[in-house]
Every structure is written in C-alpha cells, then in structure tokens.
Length: 404
Image 1: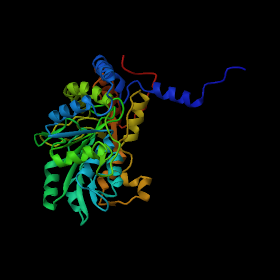
Image 2 (image 1 turned 180 degrees about the vertical axis):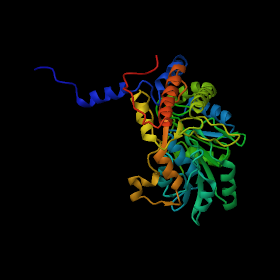
Image 3 (image 1 turned 60 degrees about the vertical axis):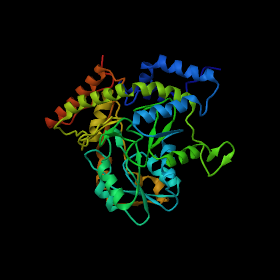
C-alpha cells in the first residue's frame, strides 16, 4: 500500500506554528532561562514521594504570602477556582449580586455564576481598562453583596475609590488579580487590599507555571480557613466534611516549579516594564494609544494592550510581518451565548463596547530579545508613518522580514 499523505489538521498546525517570527507569548523561552533550577526542584519533589499538599505547597504558600504582604495564601488548582473559592469564602451565594467588569476573561463571571450568584456588569475606564468606580456605584442594588474588580492586563484597578464605594454600602471586595501578581497601588501589592484576592499561575501569567494553578490571598483567618476546606472537598480534617467542597489542590510539582520562579519574579516584572516603556516611546502621541496607569501605581504588563481605531489594519500589518498579536477581548462578556440563558444585569457599558472594537495586544514577555523588541517597534513605526502620510499601510510578506 502506498504511503498516505499526513492528516490535513497536522499540516495546518505546522503552518500556524511557523507563521510568526515573534510570538505573542513564549512560555518555553521563559522556562529555558530557569531550566536547571526548575528541573532540580521538580526532581527532588518527585523523589520525596509526596505529590499532594506536601512541603512544597506549604512553602510556596508561605513565600507567596511574604511576597504579597498578606497573612494567608491558599494554593488551589486554577485561577478560576481561586475566584470561586474567594467569593464563596467571603459569603457570596445563591441570589447575591456581584458587580464586576464585562471586559475581562470569562472566568470572572463564571465564578460568580457557579455560586448561584448574579454578575452585574459596570463600565470601564478607557485609560486603563479597569472598572469605573462611578459606574460601579450606579449598578448597586438591594441584592448586591460584593464588588469584584479586575486588575486587567497587569494594571491595578482604582482600589481606593472602589473600597470607598464598598465601605459606603457595606460590601465585600474580592480582587481578581489573575493577571497582576506584583502590581502595586496605594503603596501595597494587589491581593492585599480587598477581603480576599485570586491569582492565576497559567503559563502565560506574570508568575506562570507549567499547567494550571492558582491561589487565594487574604488577611482574614476565617476566609483562609474556609478556602482551605473548600479546596479539599470541604474537609475540616481527615474524613470530617463540614460543607460541599471542591477538588482544587495545587500539586507539589507545580509548587516546586513556582517556588523557583517566584525567586525571579521581580526581575521578570522589570523586564516586562522595560519592554512596555520601549513600545510606549514609539506610539506616544500617535494613532495608537497606550494604557495610562493610575498615578503612583505599578503596572506589571501581563499583556501590553493598546487602543487603535484601525485595529484590524494594524493587526494584519504586524501579522504579515511575522509579529503575532491578540485581541483581548473581542466582545463584552454579556455578548457571549452563555448569557442568553445565564442571569445577569448591566449598566451602560458603552466604553467596554468601544474597547472591544479597538484593543490589540503586542508581544511582551521576559524572554523577548532586544532585537525582537526593536523589530516590533520598527514595524509599529512603519505602520504609523504610512498612516500619517495618508496612505493605507501595506502588509509585507511574513517571509520578507524578521529580526536577525
């Protein structure tokens, strides 16, 4: 029998993998920088014979709590679980309303829905893509239990104003810090401002693991106690179950790797900030607008996201030049089919609608080389100059360019 052609799906995948010279994310390149340390830490953990809720998880929780400046950290299986457990441990349940952003990843809303609560979508600011406190206050109702601000793309939300709204109305604040580990506002790191906070260790995050992972942070002992029970099937102790819980435990191998990367997270954040500053200098004052972070805040740039009225033109131009870009997010959460049946409420979210039509995220990660950053800057400038001359930028072939 003659040999058959390879399956078409494999061909397509191969083309996609080779299409971009500069990727939007590159977790493998980041891993290679710390490969020896990570391999050694994971190997020792494998040799220990303890893989669930052992020494590595306990040490990681202690070290992350110290880094964040909080009393308690509870490591869990994912950022989504961290959101769900944070809300549940703060008393959010069936029939409660939680005010949050429509301009974020679906996990923010799905965590609310899984508890039988109702997401209420307030509008954002186009300066930093975070919740507008005035819109939040306008969305409050008799059943509002909590506010869930998202520190989007690594930029801290306006927490002082949000906390003031919460205090006026006796509400809980749970921070969605999935994208913002290390970000700072009000002189503190995010995760240390609300009643609880949720972090994600998805591979492309600021502190990325090699699989899923997440954590709950809090300064409240009772919240931490409940979160610990919930992550382990609702167990108060072995074979004693007080509530319906989850199977949501960060495993020892992930904790071993994350402990290594936590030691380097500050240097990785500073690299992210330096790349963002290099991009900022190219686009300043032009048709592409960068995030304007709050005064005194520290942005950690889990994503470098800009606004551009001609977003699709810019995306196509950069893509053809071999620069992968992403759209986070193409529609507000309430425009997903999920919400044709799922309950929700919303205020005027016109700025979120605008953002969805104009945002574009550029490559930014610690392992991005100087030549790669220079190439992205060059192509950005080419597009801007063509636009300023009144000409439609013409995309080059992917095969023609690229950093040397």
